[in-house]
Length: 122
Image 1 (cartoon, helix red, strand yellow):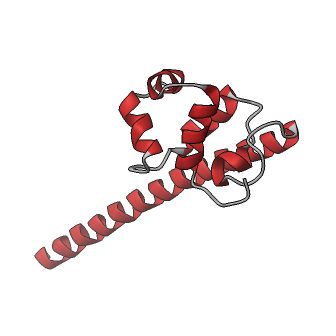
Image 2 (cartoon, rainbow, N blue to C red):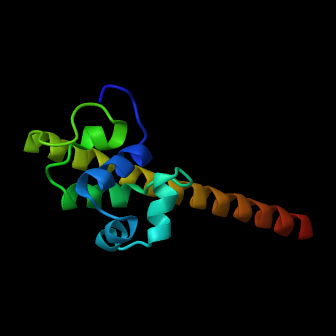
C-alpha cells in the first residue's frame, strides 16, 4: 500500500489478514474487546506499549507499515524491525519524561503560590 494510513486502520487490516476477532486480539494484548474496537474505530490512539507488543507478537510484521501503511505488511529485514522497536521504545520514554516534566512544572507552580501566601503573611 502506498497511501498513508493511521495505525488504527492498519490494525483493522492486520486483524482481517490474521483472521482474528477483536476479542482474540484483545486477549493476546491483555486488553478488552472494547479497547480493540476503540482503536480500530479511531476513538482512541493505540498506546506505544501495545504497538511494541504487537510487533513482538508478529515479528514478521513491518513496523513501518503498521504505523503508516507504507510498504508491505510483512517480511522485512530483522534489523529494520529492531530499529523500529527501538524508536518506539524511545518515543515511549520521551512521552513518560514529558508527562513527568509537566507534573513537576505543576508542582513548582503550586509551591510558588504557597511561597507567595507565606510571604504575604510575614
